[in-house]
Length: 140
Image (cartoon, rainbow, N blue to C red):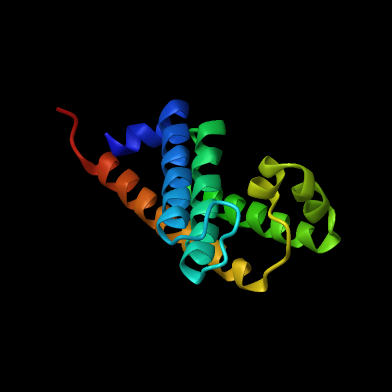
């Protein structure tokens, strides 16, 4: 069942929304507010969950992707967004748009480069394990 959820666009989109909801929930419970995020718990978990959400979005776009390929793509995308922050463009956009701030961030943080894999690699391993188990089971 879990594997089939990843194989459907709607299921993967739902998983992405769950990651987004958990990230916002942590920020609210940590008392940081959605746009502040100054606490370490909210900041680091938000970074890892952002990467997890990107991984799930990739499966919403390409349900037949392999976990490792999607993992590499998700981490690469996150790193590209983080490096884009060095240009200052995301900070300018963030001043005018909450959506831009949530999607692109505002300021480069080198530690985020380490937290993105933390959000993706466990999903890749779990996803691959579930796929392996589902292909070994005999059909009923």
